[in-house]
Image (cartoon, rainbow, N blue to C red; front, side, top):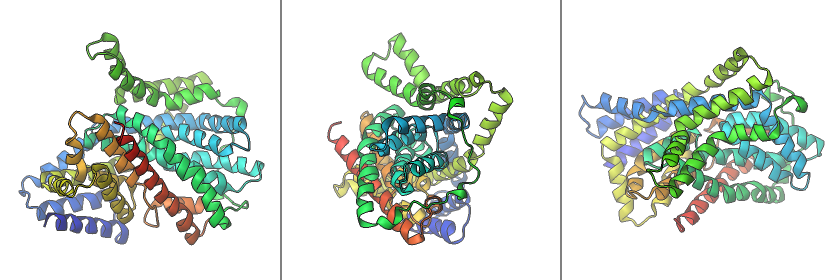
Length: 447
């Protein structure tokens, strides 16, 4: 019965989102109430469970998401992303152009959501592809693969940050292990897959692509953009602060006053605040921008945050119902009895939900609620909990297809037909998810 109730809940969620086109947040809350009733939760307790799930999930995430979005917008509007991309591409040259695109996309992807990063980087590589007489797809695949990996694996992106809280994983550990896992994943899903796809399906590698669908693109004069070093430092500042704090936690004793200060400024909330203040100066005031212009950029950036927060809050509500209703514990016990690795179980559950629901964030949040007891069983082994987060992240990008907005963005931006998008992009995201699982599995052998 518990599994049947979960299946009914997921089927209902899919029906409302895919068939009825109902708002995702509303669908999650309705599903949470219905599943809570089916699980026999006391009627008086159900609203409290929903509220606890939403409130407990959002908490500090609003700070991280809000500041992170502002930071990315300031870097983008100042031309920092343009400077990073063009500098790396100029330095690496034609032969290593894919490596340059990957590095640029990785740095920019740390500061921007997948969809926003796509809009920022794509016009740049379109110009580069045209100048080098290359198919846009040749540079687009490593770019999109890298942006997808940063979105799925690395804090302060929404899904890995939220999942870390659910599974009790240290954000710093998730970040460091995520970077390690990201390297082979990007290589396989980027250059290696690119080579393979070009061999077996060369028709998608066209040079006559029109990206007018992106709308008006702001042209930058390279001399008027921030310098490369300060652009990279600003974009990566949150990662640097969190990573340094994590490394120092292994080196210094907890009672050490220096370590206490480093842990203070490396806490995710404060790291994001300090990084944002730094960006206000480097990407704004020092570039002779007025505070009104800087504030406008920050306000504009926040417009994409509420919907994401509501979806994550709805996912938190559904997760809390599954926890209070005993489903999470039941699923955990079930997988423990079958001797399936918790990492594989986390990836498999998420991948199935991803294919069914479309939204990687909803799939990841729902799966995290189901596998939370598996992660908690590791106790003080935060590294294993972090790997569970990465396994969920890898599963959340599996086989992106017609029920996800990202699929249609790729189709339009690269001028592909529906069949071409399914054979190229859906295959790419499947390879990326499997490569990510393999990378996480390999790391688990050494931690």
